[in-house]
Length: 117
Image (cartoon, rainbow, N blue to C red; front, side, top):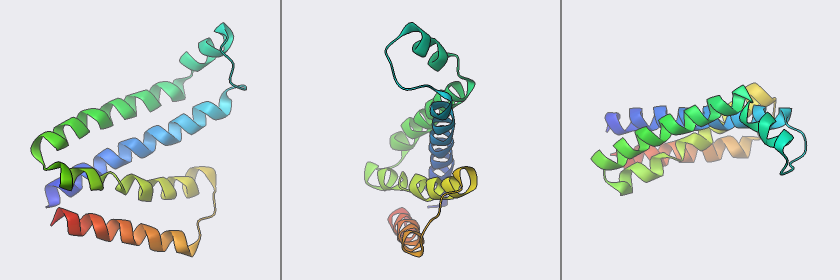
């Protein structure tokens, strides 16, 4: 049980980091246009590169997880990234998170615990 939870936490943290870096990268970008200038800025943005690296590592770990664990156990574990995403929204983007959303996070975490058992 703890093995799948540890892998899921690492994979979810990588997914969350990827989303945070993607948001940082997009904040630096001008309005979306299919121009050479826009594509150059997009492809040379270091935050976008780190975002891609995080997503790639998360994908490799995901492949490993679904190879060794039943999909019915591994797939729900991805929802942990919602929990980490809310924490990242508070830390990096200073967003307000209501009490009701924290209750939802609690239910997600409890669900992952019961599924992993």
